[in-house]
Each structure stands twice: as structure tokens, then as C-alpha cells.
Length: 609
Image (cartoon, helix red, strand yellow):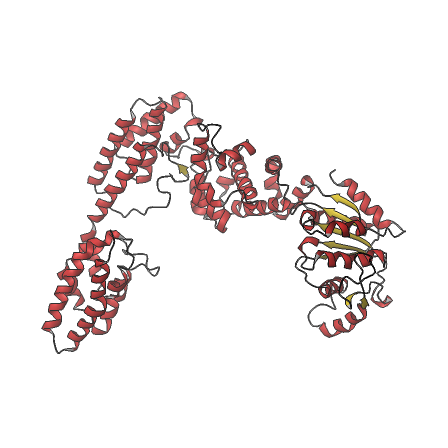
């Protein structure tokens, strides 16, 4: 068993009747399991009736703070709230004034009058003469290393205490004086190696779902070993994160052992690499393309991040990330688990294909089929595609991309150019049938993937031409609905003037917003002014607030189409102001003209196209 010799030595060291007059150092990098190891060792020495005093020095910045930790550990009741006065009285009996000579040159190197605990406490407080002192997180203490180790040396050299230090020695060695002090204080140094089997049992037990992890223990061990980081803390975090994810998924997903193993493997790898600083969560967005491109890259080219991971983790199925990059980023970077969307995308994977799975998704997982099944699916999907049975723009991208890819590999008889022409014809016919009228919200990686699956052939000119064509036709279809939408919107102006303006501004207060599309071109200026004149004078300001805010974002060049509309509205308002001169309503209209509409005219004049 790893570290068993260290356990044995510590036990002998603590049971020795003669004072050793040296401390033991347990070293190892952060996350290797040093604290876990020493806590287990404490159990062993306690079983031999040896008492210990364990203190973590993480963040401690003074010797008095160390003293208080001694006191708090020895007397938790007296250090609790409500016992502060009694605690101060008794704590006063624990102090002694000492001078500490760090380098044995006869001079006091540390501050005088340092208060340290008098370990030989009064009998009625406990006999602590056989205590083993354990100081963890030495390198994370805010006290200067030389002062701290000189302080600890007093317990070893002058009071004959057995002391165990736990530290990441690589950090201590950055201090030039460390090696000199180490020779005086530390007699034995042991390096802790991860006790994976024992720790993994504890970690899975902590998740309270250890039975769930039992079938995947070998995968966890292998992935952890391949990381070469030896950081048990990162492993524990990954398992806790995966447990949180798994518990939000339905049984139909988690019952698939293969799917769970694949998902677990990816989360482990991403967590290890991100926590170690080798990649960021955002890098995942480039992984699928990276996997495809590494096959053809020359040996002289610098390897992509995913190429390096593929070499490091040979079993990684990075060509199938199971989830969209955006979902992975949410999980790893923000702790967000969109279980509805995650479940939907996992159901599209090859692991959960069923009779209910759409044939085009079955075709996306083409590597899982026989040649006969592949041909049947290809012909059926293409036929249904030409029969306009696929209306979703993302489905159209998937199917056209797959067919182009199959054509490029000589496993589909249509040429890429034929597929491109047929796809455009289908898009036109779908538009003519009244579809594509809904506004298409473009994502950051709109042409990368959809439904948790990467688009095939997505780097080709032909596929990008399909994407551009869908965007163009969708935009035209949406613009054609402006008169209908405008007709509904203008009816709100007299009754809900504030909400009318909200719908035209960039705001989170309403889901119905047209802040970035020239929707006003669908409302005749005369109709707008007629509705505005029905608004009470007290509500005119709210009704016309959009004029001041709508055109501030000059990057939104689509709104330049409303320039003529605003100018015409200004002309009509000016006429109404003149015709109502000398009236309160005329005065309020003029205020709107001066402080709202004129500002909109000025903003549109300054638009940069």
C-alpha cells in the first residue's frame, strides 16, 4: 500500500519514549492528499493512546493566532461564544515569554516577548506533556518562513515535543533561508503519494451515491492517472460536480452505463485540465474542429489543445462531446445545469437511439449502422428533405451538411453542388409556404452545432453558403411580417404608452422587444401620430421615450432604415404643434419634439454604416 512505510515510521516516532529532537516533514504538491494522509495517521496514533494537537496554519499571520488555535483546539467549550471571559482568564495561564534563537548564533533573531502556549498546562486543564504537535499548511502561513520554523523549533529542541510538519516543500524552497533552517529542525522527510484506491472510496462515499460510481471506478482511476497531475482535490471536486449533474437527469439517461461513462470521462478530463490551468472552459468550443483538423495536420504544425488531450487521454471520445460547447461552459465555468436542455441533447446521442428517435439523428450517428441501414436512412432522409418535411432551419443545416459530407466521401450519389441547389430550392419553397416568418435569434456559434451535435462539413464554402442563405431568407420573411406586427404594436400605444416604448428599447423588462430590428417601418407615420394624439399629456413622455434611447447603439446599422420614418414623424408633429399653438397639448407636443424626436434625428444622422 502506498505510504505504508510512512505510517509505520510516524507510529514509531510518536511512541518513542526518548525525545527525537527533530521534526518530521510530510511533503507533496497541493492536492496530493497530504491532509487526508495525516488525518488517517492521527487515527492510528490515537488508537495507541497518543494524543495530538493538529493545527492548520492556512492564513495565520501571527504567533498569537497560533496560540489561540492551540487553545481553541484544546478547549472548544471555553473558546465558544458565551464563554469569552472565562476563556481569556484561562488563556492567560498558557502564556510564557521566550527569546528564540533561530540560527544558534547567540543572538535573538525573532521578536522578543513572543507569546507561545506553555504546553505544560496546569493539571486541572489536562496533562499535555505527551502531545504530538502537527502543523499543516506550513507554506500557506503568512508568518515569515524563517520566523515560523524558528518558533516551531523551540518546541522540538527546548521542550522535547514530537512535531510533524505538512507542507508543499516546493513553495518553501523559494525562501533562500529554508534549507539552512531545515537542517536544524527536520530530521526525516517523506513524500506523500496519492492513495487513490482508499481516497476514491472516501470520495464516492462523500457523494452519497457510491453504488452509482462502482461500475466506473476503473475509468475514474485511469483518467486520473492519465492526467499526471496527482491532484486528489480536483478529483473530489469533479466527482461532486458530476453527482450534482447526474442527480438532475432522468433515469432514462442515467440508466445507460455507456452514456454515463462517456459523460463522466469528459467531465473528469475537462475539470483536471481547467483546474490545472492547461485549458479554459471556453476552449471547448474549438474542440470538435480541432479533432477533425488534427488528422490532416503536418507534424511541423503546433498541436491544438484537443490534439494534445487526445494523446494524453487515448480513450477520450472528443469527436462526440455529447453536449454543445455552450452547455459545457455553463457547467464548468458557471455551475449552471440546464437539465432540460442537457437531457434533450443527451437523448440525441447514439447511446439513447430508439424507434422514436428521428431518422436524421440516427443518420448523424452513421458510424453505428451497417452499410444497408446507412443507405436506407440516407435515401429516406433525403426524400423527406425534398418533400419539405423538415422546417426547422437547424435541421436543414444538419441534413444538408451531412449529405455534403457523405458526398465528399463518395458514399452518397448526389454531388455537393446538386445538394446545395436542392437545399436552396427547399428553403425557397418553405418560405413560400409561410414558414421562416419567426425572428431567428442567432447564437455566437450559430453555424457550429445544434441540438448538441456538430454540423458536418461546416468549414466548407457550400455549407456556409447554405447558412447565409437561410439567414437571408429568414430575414426577408421576418421583415415581411413588420406591417402585421406593427399593426398589433400600435394598438398598445394609447392604452399602454410605457410598454409601447419598452418594446422598442433594449430592456430586460419585457420579452417582446424589437430594439434591434426596423419594426417601425411597418407602421405608417400618420398612423403612429394619430395614435400618439390619443395619449394623455402626462403619458406623452413615456410614449416617446424610445426616440431618445433607440438609436444610441450606432453599431445596430439595421435601424438606419427608420431614418426616413423618423423624419416624416417629425414633420407631422411639427404641423400638429403649430395647429395647437397656445394650448397645453401643443406645448407638451413641442417638448416631445425638442427633447425626444430631434435627438433621434441627430442620432440617425451620426450613424456610421
